[in-house]
Every structure is written in C-alpha cells, then in structure tokens.
Length: 140
Image (cartoon, rainbow, N blue to C red; front, side):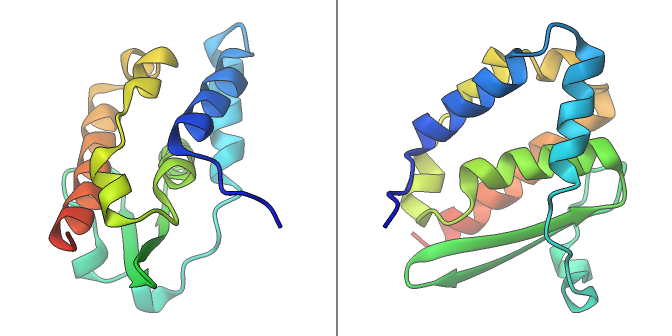
C-alpha cells in the first residue's frame, strides 16, 4: 500500500521537476504535457455552476466530497491553462477541506511561474485557486 504524499512533498516534487528545465520554452512544454494527462471531463459537469469566471479560457472545476475528502475534476479549452489545472490538481486533489484551506502556495513562487504567465493567465490561476479554496472553506 502506498502512502499519500504530504502537500509539501507534492509541491517540492513539482518545483524539482519544473526547475529541472533551464529555459521557459521547455518549462511551458512540460506544463502543456501535464495538461494532456487530465482525465476527460464528462459534458454533464461542464455547467455554469462549475465554470470559473475571471478566466480568459473556458475552465470548469467539478468538486465532490466523499468520505471527508474533496475529489476534483477540471478541464479547459486551452493547453497552458490545462497544464495549470493539472498542477493545481496534483496539490489539491484528494485532500480534506482543512488541508486545502491550509496549503501554502509558496511553490508557485519557487517555480517562478507567476512572473512568466500573462496577466490574464495569472488572473485565471488566481480564480481557480480561489474557487477550490472557497469550496473547501464551505465544507469546514
């Protein structure tokens, strides 16, 4: 049986993998490749209630709670945004609402990611994070 990694371990792993690449072209490619690993989201979850407002791209996040843990599924119509979603799901998915509300996001700065996103993508990332945290806070 495998032990679930702490969010700190997951974040450090992401930082290590992401900063392994010397240039931003390769980092973006890695981010896009991460997005390609997202599970397909059924159309029934692509609802107005699951749509993230504030994103330039279309982004849907579907969150259900099962046995005290939040299970997240998300998708986007944009490649880089899909990668950002995959990044967030690695950190937030299958965590308790309490864990989600307490997760620091320092790893984004360590990856130097925010500084290399367009203002629209940074805003979209912020809105995705806020939606996930709000869903967690509502369940506390």
